[in-house]
Length: 501
Ligand SMILES: [Zn+2]
Image (cartoon, rainbow, N blue to C red):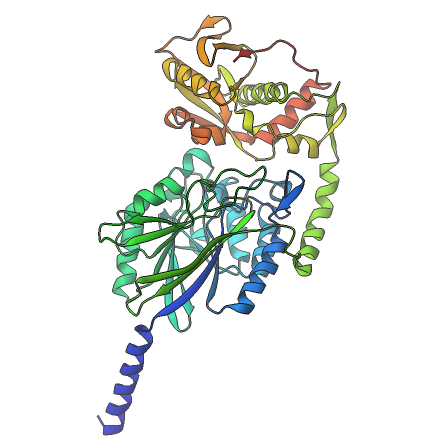
């Protein structure tokens, strides 16, 4: 080897070392659980979220700061008519334009089976990531979904590892070809592989919820930051009118076994906030400092980005026609949400029967009834306003004793709304009786209870529903509700109460 080439090699080595060992400051902007909320969400006279505001916000931050990453922690699918109509592709057009750099797969990404997700993945300008999937049975999807992505920031590597909820087959429809592996081990194996490759800055972008994030943060070795989703947890959000209370600080720190404080962040839901966390890594890739961390409120003070607005306008037009289509008639205005809730509980039962699934009765969570019914025509848009979440319907096996606990738990929060044939009574907040077709609930009997997927997933802390064996119906709650309205039109208010608090 000549002197010159030795010298050259030395310089190359030296620069490789100096590149790898420089400190790095990165700002990460993140959203999760957008659920097709392309447009801002109205809350008490104000509006929050909207992709066009996100675009403006991100552009402004990128103007002022360098090393900005834009990430999404899953559940872009399902939640508004935009999804029903475009199956994620309308959202994707905006996310591409905004410049997202990676997205974790959420459980809802599988709501329509692997096909729409493949179409989405093909067109995404950014990688979809989930390290705990075995896609060998779904090669078309395997082409697009990777365990992690490595983003180059100021000539350094930042790895972002994705995870998807292990429980997805129970609450969504991935089908038999997509296999889910345990999250914890899959992530640790991926970290170890990346560490061997010399990558020392590792972000895990999860989709399994805040509690699991905290639990796993304590145990994983080599994670620098966790960006989460799925539990729709507001972290560090201000106490605005009509907003859910913050579920913890932004970031939430959890100490791991090596004594490091691991920051966990999440950005609530529907893009109403955007998370912003700035991290200073030291030369070894350890988090040295978090100089800025804030859940940015996405409100009307942020100007809409004209390009995204044009996109959304174009996507909105065909939806407007669907939205105004008549589904049925309501005999008189029903402003009592409990009565609207009766319709939904009855809807779940009717749909189970229509699909040939055994069912005893239905239960509806009062918080899931989102609008009243006006007198006159009921349009698709109005039905969608009542049940906007595009939940699935699930028939869960619940033991009588658990059922009584559930009803008591419901009483503490305003009372679960039952379908026809089921009645219960509380006195001073205590459950005193419950009966199916007039027969008292038996403690060790199994009841087949139709609920929405939010409840079946343990939403509203109804954890007993999460435990039982289940059948997921084919129709969404909104599709089933439309069928119910059609079959029972004109809707009349139900005047006999089915439960007493
Ligand atoms: Zn989710």
